[in-house]
Amino acid sequence: MPRSEQPERRALMIEMPFEVKTYDIDHFGHVNNAVYVRWLEDLRLRFLDVYFPLQQQLEQGFAPIIASTEIHYKKGILLFDKPIGRLWIRHLSRAIFTLGAEITVDGQIATIATQRGVFADLEKMKAIRIPKELRERWEDAVREGR
Image (cartoon, rainbow, N blue to C red; front, side, top):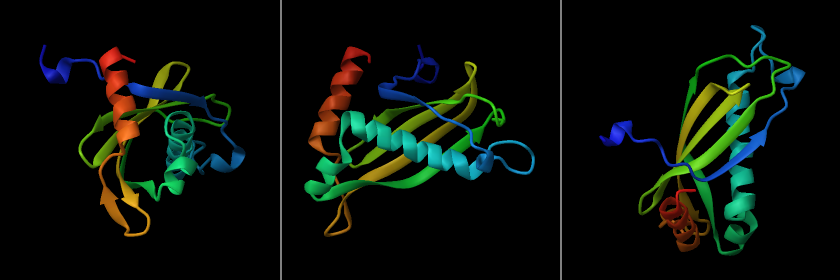
């Protein structure tokens, strides 16, 4: 099967519900685009809580930095919808991580996103290799199909 037809691995996926607030709504009655970026941040923080605590990273002198965010809006999310967000690691290179994310409503994809980033040494403000602990956890998840 060609790589483009293979199902995507969703290694170390987390899931969390979101509540649409009245202040999240734009003048067209949909969730404002800026809210999706905030929801992605919430998903990343939840991911870190579960798999690679931010406090631990800061104590070791590094932290993740997002370099790019790409969002595709498939379906508007409205005030009383019950969106569910999912985030996972798509790929790790030597120094760059790629995250996949989706937000669904009633099982239908409303938004898909990709984020790329690096871990940075906080003192030198330079990119570092993907930390060994995260790489090993991700490789184990990929190998085990979870």
